[in-house]
Amino acid sequence: MNLTNIRNYVHKDNVRDVLLLALPAVGEMILYMLVWVLDTVMVGQYGGELAVSTVGISCEIAYTISNILIAQGLAVGITSIVARRYGAKEIDTAEEYATIGFSLGAFISVVATFCIFLFAEDLLTLAGAKPEVISYGVLYIHIVCIGLSFNMMTSMFAAIHRAYGNTKTPLIISSVVVLVNLVLDGVLIFGLFGAPELGIKGAAIATAIAHISGFLYAAIYTYKKSLIKIKLKYLKFFSFTRLKSLITLSIPASMQEAAYGISKLGTTFMIMYLGTTAFAANQITLTLESISFMPGWGFAVAATTLVGNKIGEKNFEKAKEYAYTSTILGIGVMLVFSLIFLSIPTELIKLFIASSETEVITLGAACLMIAAFEQPTMAVSMIMGGALKGFGDTRTPFVVAFITSWFIRLPLVYYFIYLNKMSITYFWWICVIQWTIDGLFLFIMFKKKFKSLEAYS
Image (cartoon, rainbow, N blue to C red; front, side):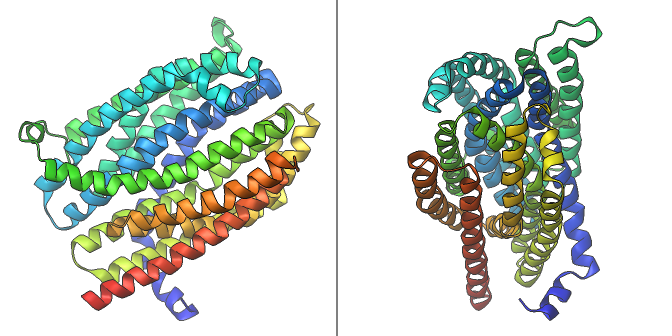
């Protein structure tokens, strides 16, 4: 992709179309991330290292499972297939897929939440959490589980809206969740306005209520105003062929998230052995990194929707244009985060922990500066993967994620962190290597995919 091509891809019409979808999606994910961030910030200020470790490992377990099964699994399959059917003007078929997908997801959500609740202590023990972290962590997970299945179902409502180009409604839903969480966090953690001072328990209650609130808004909007609705008539005459198509797309997407998520969880378990200082520094850096890759996720959503719509219309050249426009814009935005991480790392870490925790702050700042170097290649990986999913190819992103997570990240972390007890900064250099290889592979595979598509057409 030379300079002339870049200028062609970033002309105003393409940029406008991408930004109309990407910006609300970015806002949505930043707001959802704030639920975790707010809990981490407030309990960090309230209870220090122990509180940060408790919320960090508990959220890591609960949301990794949720993302694998729904948010980055079934929801991706729903968006991919509904977007192409909507682009082909097959509204009835799009609604049938949406209904089948949501029904399957609702069942999975309830079962998964029950299992997380039941095995909370076992999961925390497997993570290598210390006894004091386990006791608080079990309490936190049990309470959060009250709203977790609702959160998963909300992800599927959002996936349906994104498929027809509506990223504003998911943004509003996430605003409801964050607003409720923010208010209740302050009240219940610190005991404001005469409420009991509940600390970590208060953070969990706030999160559960916030997720239920978001679900209620999403359900009402989808029933009344969505262009793609969930209709029970499609369950009466259930199509196993449709279900198979949806599962065929969703399983590789789930496995991709599993490749990332489980390997990430595995590295988290190994990092626990470095002690609470290293773990707290790592969790704070992960939280800031999670905010930074939200733009990449937003542009990936835009790429999936726009590429999917254009593939449905058989307009392959425009699909490629949208993919490259999304990638170029995503890299630009994430480079801004690189500059921020390099410029004020200490100040950012201090937002999450008491100023007296000097060791955590110093170590976290060093990790954050290294994380700055992974931003551009992370953008390429996420957005090229999103474009491939719009095409209906969820297998390639999974294969690449599996290779880089299980044959690069895990072995290196095992050697440097678990066996040799090196500094947590080594982990972040390993992440830089992983994302560089991941992004390069997906870019090459995307170009290959569209060359074969153009030859076929």
